[in-house]
Length: 171
Image 1 (tube, rainbow, N blue to C red):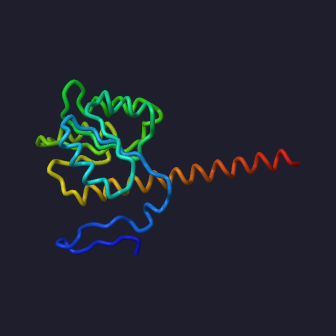
Image 2 (cartoon, rainbow, N blue to C red):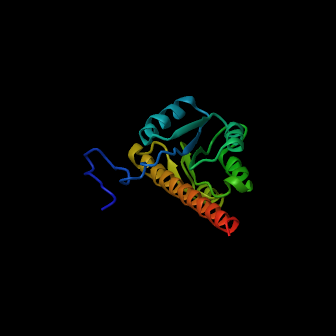
Image 3 (tube, one colour):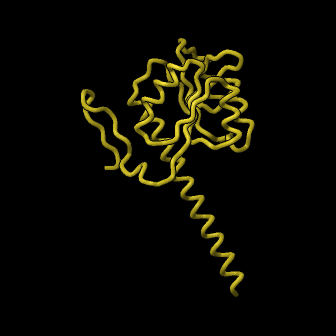
């Protein structure tokens, strides 16, 4: 089996075997206006061995998105000046980040209306704080794995395209 799970009182969930054996690293964007929440998220996710990029505001998150692509975005819902929903809406308007998975994190009680709004904006999940670190890590790991595999396929497609061009040029 490709997945393993230990008992509830064991070490928790494990990552898919072979999920991170590629040399490439994925970028994970974590967005929260509280520095202590960013630190906690980094501590939870550091074992994944990926590039963790922190943003203390929606504006800072959008600046990061202009410079690089992300495998997944962990986005706090309630932030001053620009809330997570506004940030997600702007992320979805940009072609390069249109399909980037967003996991909303909220410390306030989530209402059905808030969840509906989040999913309409393309959220792949909506987690209420405090969340189980193992579950959050596992969810992020799945999106990182999908991202890295997608990048590998794109790379292979590019190699095949270049090979076809060489064959055509050598005829």
